[in-house]
Image 1 (tube, rainbow over the protein chains, first blue to last red):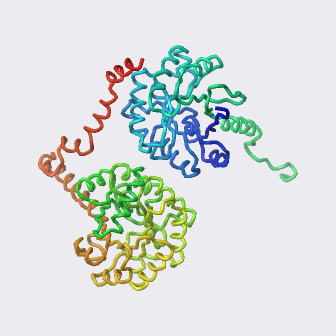
Image 2: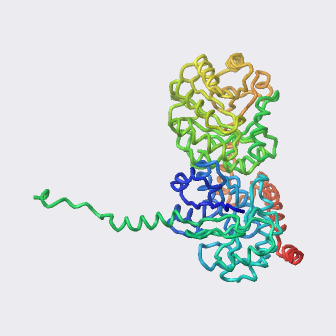
Image 3: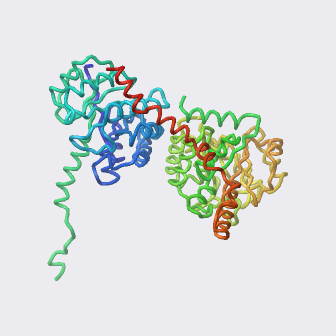
Length: 239
Length: 303
């Protein structure tokens, strides 16, 4: 694919309202950013499905473009994944990203990974729960830091056989992407995106995880240092 | 076709059909499931029951948009028959109406009604109601119609003018609301069968709703009589709330007096039946479908 779409991430209505005229093909409501907006803690695993879904429903009213929802690790076991998928789809999700993390899916660099048995059950549950034929389940592979390339390649091979919409690769480096994109696969491969990442052959899309929020947060931190704690009257006024 | 589409179409078909639609107001998702399993055509998520079940307060405009929407959403998700929603006054001005319509449509409601009372409103059968000038609800209905994404998300006008200015004014207002785009018409609290006849004569081809509230201003009439009078929708707004409250009050009194609930057991669903009713077998079956041993076998086959 010549042009690999970038899916910007958002967590607040303010960000999505700013984004909605952007020509992106869809927007990703990252669980970590939603948690940051709602709880002040940038950790997806702190949000319950119902809290995330309520926020998603409000965001849904801001745009008709596809919304990519964070199904995290299914919010429990495969049965929970089934009901969470229903809840997020009817709350407006067009794509749902199911992570292979263990529940609860905290936002971290080296997340503990669920067994393949658990992940397969959750993928089936999510696929079974979908009501609209246009809704897609995307599988997010986060096991690179803890399981390594070989295990990730083996997982990609069987995940690719399922009727999902895409496979998202996180915690990657260039060698990892080269190895994974070289594997035979039928589904789109999407990689998490950071600023200044160049296009990569075989990567069909890029998933932002918080560029706007990070940048805005840096600005806010700088501005906060200039924010006075109180306003003092000039001495001449006091006289 | 999504569930929301199916529900909207089913409601529209019934509203414009020949048989009267029997619609129960359910205080919550459980009540809605009971209504569905026992023959209701549709469920109405409405203010009196929501205020009572969630706030233990009267229907006096205290249950707000957020609570009403969430309660309706829970009911929509629990059942497979259409859910119509009480959107009160639209919860503010025209911008609020737009958000209200978009939100109810999003959660899968089959339609809403908007009314012309002043806010905070009150139950249509309570004393001292006040209504806005007709232009207010006219504008809200126009905005609602312009906001909805699907033409089969039906908008009903409700007027409470009968109690304030009399039936002629209520009919005149409803004609203006219909001209503004209302698909369905509801004149709250007529006082007699003759008034029902007058309403139907004024709207011979429009789906009309009758509200059967026990102890209210309107005489209770049988469903078949309302159908004969030309009404297409009958709603029972308080019966489930009153019945639940009566039964629970009796239960607690008995427990306090007798020190046991044993004498009330024959008036309860049993543990087994209740678990079946709320779908325990379905949930257990769902879990078993993804059991580790099955997934292990599948993984081995995929390797």
